[in-house]
Amino acid sequence: MKLNLYPYNMYILYAALFLLLVCIIMTLMRLLSMAKALGDLQAETETLSRNAAVVSEELQKQSEKKKASRISLKKILAGWLLLSAVKKDYDRHEENGMRQAVRSYRNVTEARALKKLLSEKK
Image (cartoon, rainbow, N blue to C red; front, side):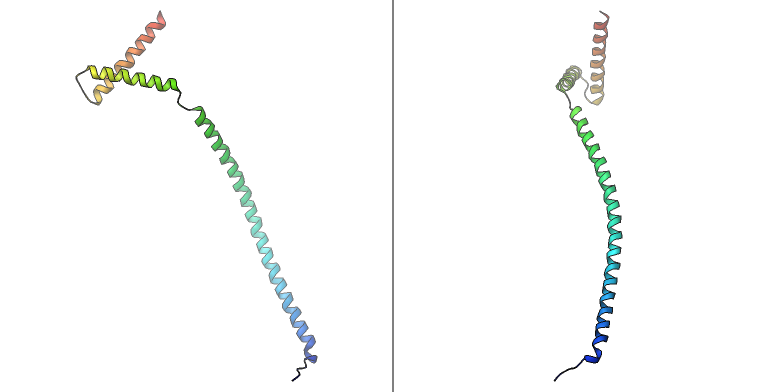
């Protein structure tokens, strides 16, 4: 059985071309909307990269501050000596508790200030 579409060949061709044109137009519309979205994303990406650069600079500054603010051995030794002097004064008195610890600290700091003042006047 032979099927002869000769009279309809041009109509089929036109329909195929029309369908192809519709598909191309839809594809272009999608590409345009995608291009807009990519432009918006690019602007946001630039903003994020600027913010990331600022944050990295701040973190770098903070890490430099941490390196500079390390506790030195002199400070540790001074604190340990002060603590031992306060403990000796605390043990000398009969009273116990936080009040006596505060009084011992005050006594030690006043004695140190007095010694420092007397040594400066000499």
